[in-house]
Length: 281
Image (cartoon, rainbow, N blue to C red):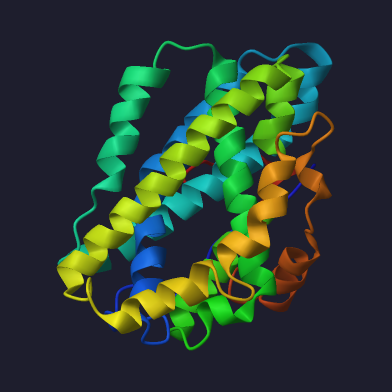
């Protein structure tokens, strides 16, 4: 598959309101929590796919060369953009506790492991980001009233995550990754992701002084469990990952394609995958 690396043209230097997601404390804290995970997480994905690519031979290597370059280019751009986003959050007094856990798990649980384990972790997490992306792109209420610059950032990121959702999974399959380990790693990632995003969200709300306010938890209900909420909307696609015949391309990529086409001026191409994308793009 060939896809495009883009350069997002959004102002992340001008500060924004603390509750930038429509004045909703929980929504803002939750999206901020996700962003705190991205620089270290995206680097892990880049290193995972790069390591896997060195193990490919013959036709498999040729098949994945351009796609790996594009994946690295997109993820490196996401990492850089969210570093800038997170710098603004830290200037507002928020503290990133999630990143340290990612780095610790990488050092103690992944270093020295078979590349397929790295890929299994990456493919599992990419499934989370893909179903989250589809939910964001098809559920306008999730970013209703958000600061326009940040709404654009999240929808751009979601669209590109949808675009490259199958790369790590396909590499895992190409290197002979087993269904058993795919399922086991997905359970582990589910537990880590759910607890880490909650811990960081609560830490953000604590720093914010909105931990105990009823409006905060009403916002949590709407975002996660209300009609069209994240948990209710993504339960089935989450569960599909366990199926033997699952493939990420069964997700709906049309909303991402539509958004990217409609916002080509906001996120113009840096270089097509076939041109050999620089990871620093």
